[in-house]
Amino acid sequence: MGQQYSINWSKIAGGGGTSTGGTYQVSGTIGQPDAGGPMTNGQYSLIGGFWSVITAIQTAGAPLLKITLNPQLSTVTVSWPASATNFVLQQNFDLTTPNWVTSGLPVTTNGAIESVTISPPTGNLFLRLKQ
Image 1: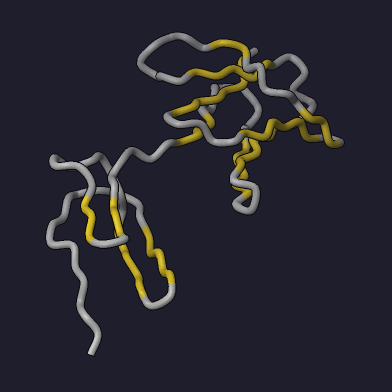
Image 2: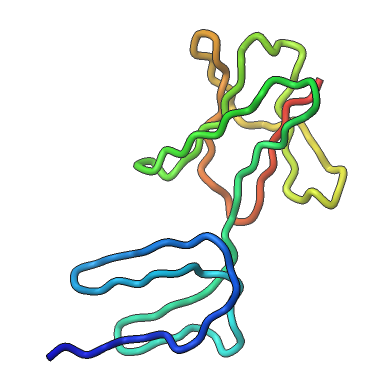
């Protein structure tokens, strides 16, 4: 008979999902690390941390930004209408500061759509279109 494995603690957190490999499965979410470091047993280790996020901030009157996940490439594409010629893509890593700067990401035009493709950074990246 097989052994039962369990993680005997919990925390309030959001998101999450299930990861399965072979005969093993874990469900939940990983958040801020708990005191004491990683949980390790044999060849398995579980380390907590923060989820990073790429977020489009809608600016009043600006065209809508669209975010598309490309899971096979581990990238996201942020796109907007090419007709938004009076707008510039800006970025900020911290919404508690007014440090919006023009994004240096290369813009691709595909017909009526302009876009940037991003390999998700560690931490936060906020994008907006600004006139």
